[in-house]
Every structure is written in structure tokens, then in C-alpha cells.
Image (cartoon, rainbow, N blue to C red; front, side, top):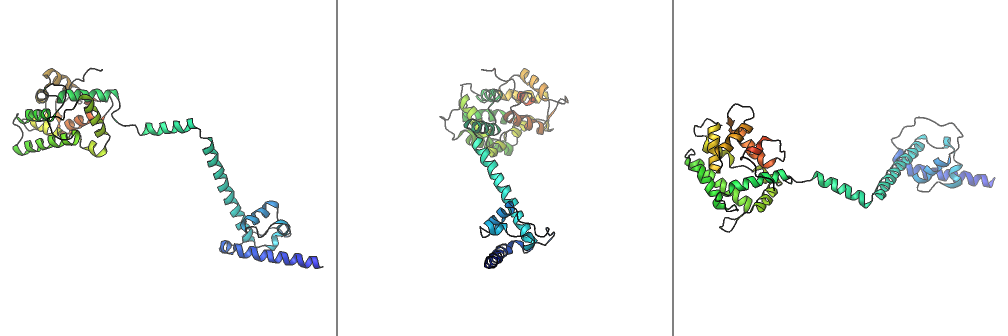
Length: 301
């Protein structure tokens, strides 16, 4: 008799503790189903109760509880808690397993894959060949290096054609000056740019978003300087004039014009001219016709 009274007391106390601990969680839940009366709590449900109550109900006391003696909402909340905990534990095991399985070789492969996605522009042999071609053109006095004097001499050739207004000519000179300072630094007789330095500087500029946007700012002035009839289009004769200012032959101009005049209408608009001139700097695709914009490319070496 005494044992029965003690058991009922333990059961009542355990139930009160459980209901207090779960009240904040199950307040909004509605009772949906009622398990069959006198259904004992299984080992797994006992474990759920142990987790949910922080150990307040466990052991023989938990096993002696009956489902019909507990609010259905409490049972549902405990099971839902158990499912979430099991899912989180499974995820942690998977993550830890993946982490443990990563070898040094796997890490290196992932690093190389990321590096390939971040590979810089201007690393191809074709692009370097194009830039060596341009270095040769900009070396107006043919001393093997490019200086600000070379830039100035080239600008003078286009200005001397007499087709730019004084205002536009002044703008052109400013653009040439700013291009040099931005790309190669200070203007001094000792700032001489070799072919390799030229490639390095342009490679840096190509991979700087802000600087890359300003590549070819001088191109519209070259176009306007040789567009002597101010039609907004260049024909073959005007393109030959462009090449003469660059120090290239008319034969080179004829070959290049035949390639870049894609639609064969015998004219090149300002938009096309600027696009091709910029694409020469930006693309590494050797199938693009812009590769002929500045004449035939130098030989590979």
C-alpha cells in the first residue's frame, strides 16, 4: 500500500515537472490525435522525454508513464524536438565526415580550380604578341623603347593633318598626356618603357576594372583626325592615311581594312573603329578580326 502511494506520488511529480518544462513550447499546439489508452511509452519515447526535460523524467519512472496520462500536444512536441535534433546531428556528422575526408591533394585541387576561375586576362601568348606589335608601332623613333616623346610625336602626326579643331586637338594632347601618366608614370626623359615592361603594365591595366574601362580613350581622336570629309565614316583611303600616321605601309592598310570591314560596305564607322581598337587590347580570341586593327602582328618569338 505504501509502495503504491509512493509510486503515484512520483508519477504526479514527474508529470508536473514535464508540463512546466514544455509549457512555453506547446502552448500554441492543438490536440489532433489521441493514442490508444494504456499504451506504454517506448524506449525511444523515453529517450525523447529525457532530452526534452533535461533529465527530469527518465528511468523506470518514464517507462511507467502511460500515453493517456500525458497531454497529446506534449508528446507531439517531444517527438518534433527529437526529429529536429536527429536532423541536426546527421548534418553535423556529414559535415565532419566531409571535412575529415579532405586530403591535402583534394585541397590543392580545389585551390587550383578556384585559381583557374580567377585567372587573369592577358596571359595568352596571342595577347602578348598583339601587345608587342603595338609596342613596335608606338616606338616612333625605333630605339627599342617607348617614351613620352614617342607619344608626343605620334600625336603630332595626327594633329598635323589639320582636320582637328584647336579645341579637339588640345583635348587629344591632354588625353595622350593622361594616358601616359596613368599607364607608365611620370613624364621624364629617363622613363623608357621596354617591350616586357610594356606588356607587364598593360597586363596590370587590363585586369584593373576601372583602368580597363579607360583603355583606348584616344581612339576617337585618331578617327576624327583622318576623317577629313567629316562624314563619320572611314573608307580605304582614309584608313591608309591612318596607317601612314602609324608608320605603316598602305599595303598593310589595304589588308587590314579588307579584314575588319566585316560587312564589306567599304566603310568603317566611328563606333566600329573604337570597338575594334578596344577589342585589340581586351580580347585573347585569335579569331577576332580586331587583331588586324594595328596592322600585321609581329612574328612569334
